[in-house]
Amino acid sequence: MVTQPIRQPSAVTWAPRPPAGRRPHHATLLGDLHGLARALAVPPGAPRWRERVLTRLAPVREDFADHVRVTEGPGGLYAELLAQAPRLDRGVRLLTREHAAIAGVLTALQHAAEVPGVSVDELRGLAEHLLRTFSRHRQRGADLLWQAYQTDLGGET
Image (cartoon, rainbow, N blue to C red):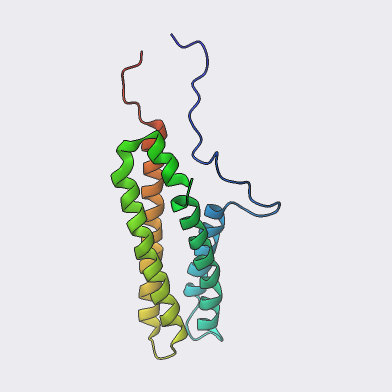
């Protein structure tokens, strides 16, 4: 019989608090992805369209680098997940491989936006691929956290 509330481990107990006035990296990344999507939605004939896309892409790249440091770095989220739930090794490896793929798409999108000869359709195609990839990655990460901390493996009554 349990007489005290069961406490789940925190997925971010090791992470430092963001500086005052600064949002956590995942909230910043998500907001910057929305900003990039809005910049891409503007008609490409608008003045400085590519420049706006590049301007919105820069913080996405920075926030993604922060995300990789927070998750893969020493004492990062993935290390904590594996310490709590070694059975999630396959999922952690998948997310790590996705980081490399996302970094590649970010680089390709940056290059495409900087080269005036790249068509708007190609640029938007890369950006849409990036946004879909981020969305899937985010969902897989959430699923992995759920598996680590909310899955009941049984054995307790």
